[in-house]
Length: 80
Image 1 (cartoon, one colour):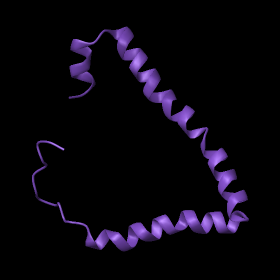
Image 2 (image 1 turned 120 degrees about the vertical axis):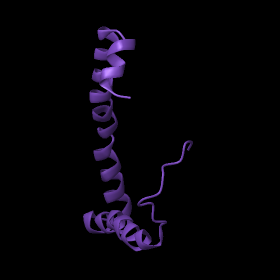
Image 3 (image 1 turned 180 degrees about the vertical axis):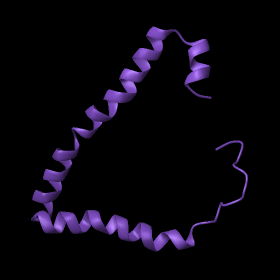
């Protein structure tokens, strides 16, 4: 399902509204980022401590990746 299918079942005005929403919603959500960053920096006592905490999430992901199930060549599930 893509834009070609949506063109046949949804009006141009509705598609325009959907595109505008999908483009601008992340902008509104991301404006909270500096507030969260500032809170972490103040709460953890400095930029270095906050950066270390956020960086640990990436390290956890790298360590967990080899233990996740391999899905290459397997069919996608029909339902979530």
